[in-house]
Every structure is written in C-alpha cells, then in structure tokens.
Image (cartoon, rainbow, N blue to C red; front, side):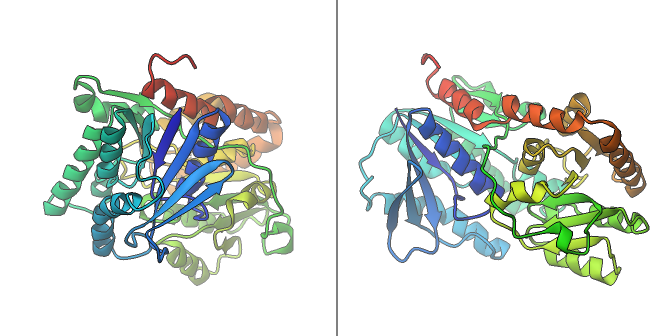
Length: 400
C-alpha cells in the first residue's frame, strides 16, 4: 500500500511539527507502507528535489516563503503554496504516481487543494490531521477580529475540511467543533492523539552543571515561545521564586516572544533564569536528563483544547509537568487523572507558585511519579498507535 503525506514542515526543520511528521512517516515505513512525503520548500532553485530519508521518499517542491515573514506575505505565500506544489509535482518523477491514501497535516490550513487533487487522481480516501483550530484560536487570542480576514480564513478552513473523509483531532474536547461537518454522509471525526517516537539520545550541547543554574532543581521549557503560549506567567513565576536558590528556570527554543522574554528577564535581573536558542531534537533527551520538571504554557484565552508535543516529550523522558493552561482544557484532566504533575487554569501566578513548590516537594517523596510519566507515553502517544488508526480510517475493511 502506498501512502502520501502532505505537510509544510519536515526535517531538517527543527519545529515540533517537523519532528512529528518525521516520526509518523518513518512509522508508516516500519509498518510496511510505501510512504511519500510532499513538502514545500522556498530554498530550492529548481522545481523539485527527490530524496530518501530513512526509507521515506521525500519530494521537496519549490513554493513561496511562508516562515519567519510578516502576516500578509505569509498569507499570500500559503494561499499560493498548494498550487505551486501541484505545478512542480507535475514536473517531477512522481507526476503520474498513484497512492492508496492521502494524509495531510494542519497547520497549515491551505493544503486542501493539493490533497483534493491527489485524492481525485488516485480515487482514494483522505485523512486530515488537525493539530490546531485556526482561525478560531487567533480570534480567542485577540490576533484576529471577525471581519473580512476572518471570513477568508474560515472559507479556506471549511474547504480543507470538505476534502477530508476523516478528521483526526488531538483531544476529545475538540470533537464537538466538527459536529456539523461529521453529520455529512461518509464523514467522520475521531481523536488522534499526538505522538512522539523514542529517539536515541545524543550528547546535549547545553550542560546545566557548567552554568548559572548548577545544583538547582530545574524547571525546563523547550519549544516555541510565541503568542499562543502566553509565557509571561512563567517569567512571573521565576520572579516570584527568585529568593529560592534551589530552583532554576531553563528556557530553550525560539519564537516571536523569545527575545522579548529574554530581555524582560535581564531587565528584572533574574539570576534563576537562563535562555538558550533551540537545539537539535536529538539533543532533547539529553537536555531533559539534566532537569526535574517540564513546563507547559498555553494562553488562558484559548477556547480550544491542546495537548502540546512538549508534554509528550516530557512524559517520554519521565519529567512531571507544571502546566498553566486555559480553563477546561482536556490536558488538565489528563495530568490530574494520571498524577503526572500540577495544573493551573486560572492564570494566577500565586496559584502557579503554590503548585510549583508543591510539585518540587512531590518529586522528592513520590518515587513513582517519573515511572507514571513514562508509562503514560507509549500506549497513548506512540507513532505506532497513530499509524494504525489512520490506516483503519483510510481502509475500514483492512485487517490491522
């Protein structure tokens, strides 16, 4: 069986999305499926580049720049992206290739046209993996009002949903958002948990014992630092705990808010905070091995549910979690039910400080907490489970 996977992120990019797509595509191969990944690339000076990466056929297709640019240019670039990908696909050696299933990953919301074209050409079913609900979250955050731009994005969003036979959302709380869509004949929505493969650790370029935070219990945040994360409260927490010389805060990553947060820490003369640029994903296990608690931040204005990839990486490494998230998020139930950390959902730094100190105490007296974190990872958040679920949806009569 041949599967085509369409996305806008893949290694050598270091984003969590690119790591997820790498793990998913390699698991398709491991389970015996011939797998092709179609990726847009603004760096190409030719229409296409065909590679093989760990058994996965990767076709990079020249397309407009859509990363690290202004909102208007990004929107135009993403709108044109699927059409340019299609045009350059038709110039490639895979121009007449046929697949038995089309899978695509959102974000971006703009890949619907290429997914539809391949689905029609191959006469197969399609599966849309939705990891955030845009433009709704942008409205919740105050980044977008319900005007003309919002209506444009809603049109794009609804178009890509119309192409899918099955939509996989990352949390049970998001299923209700698709009720109207699932009522259409032949359409179905299901929970497809995030996933993360076990990765052999390599030496980490960040060595905590050689730096400012040596000898402390380390709260670590590794990942994107953007508007959606609402990370100011984590810096407020570090400020509130500045008098405790046994606790340190380590932030690793990039994003639109990274420099602002770093400048704020310097302005406040926080000696318990260290920032580092993003590191290669293969270094993450080595980083977490030096830390004690993982941090998750989601802006409290969010109304949709989100189980971030970093939560999975903390669980995989046996790190209990301190989370500050939006009220009602399914992640709160998961953390509390499985007893793998503490959750603040009221946006209060006072509450978060209390929970942080409580968790520091808990990891000292509860030797099983790290084991609970690791045991949660495999049955829920493995690529193996994700692939089996996708294949079952694409071919309902196939025996898995």
